[in-house]
Length: 203
Image: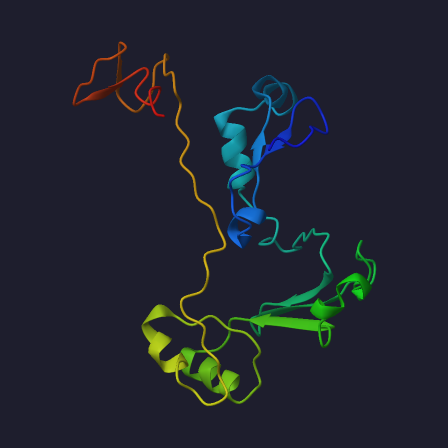
């Protein structure tokens, strides 16, 4: 099934044969115009490197810059005590609290008004705080996973369902100098290079 495009440049494609699994419903496949992207977002390698790895990260400077449109609003960062916190954002676009009238069966039992995230504790302190009810959520290092299981009052779900779809994308017609090695002519396969149409006959 191909959904009607909202513009001439982007559309979403889903297979009619796909089963309604969560991992497929939460992800579509976008097709965008290469010429449009180059026209609107032209850049060079140095620009991309500077954008992805700036000299001073926005959140790491003396005056951190935080931006977002989610249901929580950043409150403050305490570097001395190793934590940051956020409050519920009453101006959230969907409303706060959200209107669940159409989905009464999914209505939550309550809402989080204040959120604190810290990295100050050792594993032993974090585990004790969680088991005592002082911490609601924490990450368990893999080497301590056995200590988090079979605890009174703790329901462990393992393994978790896969909520992602991965993909590999290849250039089907390589015809320019490449740092990957020698580019051979069509239908020629060598141990120190790749043919131009190496992935072109994949069905």
